Length: 239
Image 1 (spheres, helix red, strand yellow):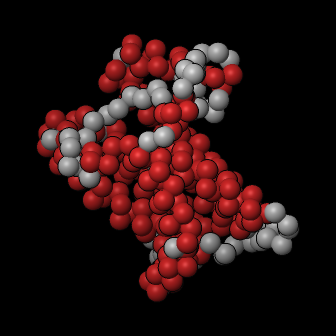
Image 2: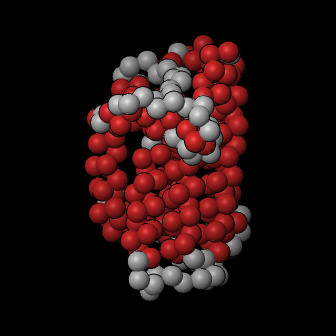
């Protein structure tokens, strides 16, 4: 990819495009793939192709995040770091709803295509998209250059496509049952709650007292403190 252009922003977009095509493409062919080779085998194939591409994108991003044209600088403003940290922290609770089924993620149990309406799904039907928006806004504010802006554009474009593609796949899989859930949930956070389509039970907060949310909490804090290690590893690869 680096040979495509000397412009790191162009290379970053190309890397994200390849990841998006492979990731969303395989997701779109999930039903057919599972019929041909089985649920577990398809999950292993999906992860085996997607994860190396994702790691490549992360490493390239870390190595070149301060390239490009500096557009603004907020790093010296009091409270800016705390705001960016809080937005990033919250973003991970939206980004990783798949941790609800760790055994399925690892293909120990047969992976299934789930349709949820509890927990974080009451806030938004597409938490990964919302989490990506929060993460991109936070990091774009903090880094403040054209490379970060370009990276955020690529990530958000992929996730917006994922909103449409995800709803399309659920509609094909579940039909009228998905339409019922769709009418009671929203893409925009809190929209269905505010307009009365999503009725919160009195003990709705208990839906968040689950092991997956505490797992996300631990992993998010771990990732924050592991930033120096991630950066050192990426610099060592020199991509």
